Structure formats: C-alpha cells, structure tokens
Image (cartoon, rainbow, N blue to C red; front, top):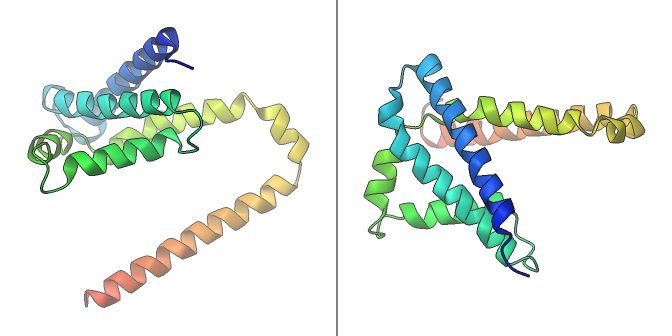
Length: 154
C-alpha cells in the first residue's frame, strides 16, 4: 500500500481547476480581486491535497479526507501555532460561499452519474430527503435560537 502518484497528480489537477473556478466565482459574485485570493486558495488546496494523501497512506484508518482537512486546518490555525496568523491572513480572502458553487456542481454531477442507483430507491428517497432536510433545518434553527438567546440578541 503506497501512494499512487498518478491518482495524486490527477487529484491535484482537479483541485487546481476547482480553485480557478472558485476564484472566478468570487471575482464575479463578490468582487474579490483574484490576485488577493490566490495565496489563500493555494493554502486551501494544499490542505485538501495533504488530507487526500494522508487518507491514501492510511487506508486502514476509517477517517474521511474531509475530516483530515478539517483537522489540518484546525491545527494550522490554533492561536499558539506559528502558522496561524499567516494562514488566517491569506485564507480570509477566500469567501466561503464562493467555494460552494463548484462544490455543489460537482456533487450534482456525482449524483447524476448514479441515477440508476437512485431509481432503485424509488419513492423512499423522497421521504428520506424531506426528513433529512427538515431535521437539518430545525436542528440549525434550534442551535441558532439558543446561541442568539445566550448572547441576548433575541
């Protein structure tokens, strides 16, 4: 079990393409200059690539790549870490909502490629979707209400 360099290279190419799409979307949607956001986007891509490499090097550890990315980002941004100020300064130029458009587009394509599997689920997927959406909405609303109440805003 080693690192598949061709797979890793392909992942890097895809990350760079998605990064370019995010930069364009930020420029169009939020007016953020591309040159200001490039360093932050490169840091985010590096964190994502590191998480994919860690996941591939440790296949027996059942920890998804997004969790590795979250952990790496958390560690890099902890106040006592020497990397915190630099990482935060550059990544704050990358608008979070600007990253969602290409990610959701890719998720949609992924779902579209598995349409036959969804057909097998038939009407049950509709019920499950409504329950998940409602649970997420009400769960978020309850947490937001509690936080706003504790802060005295409402």
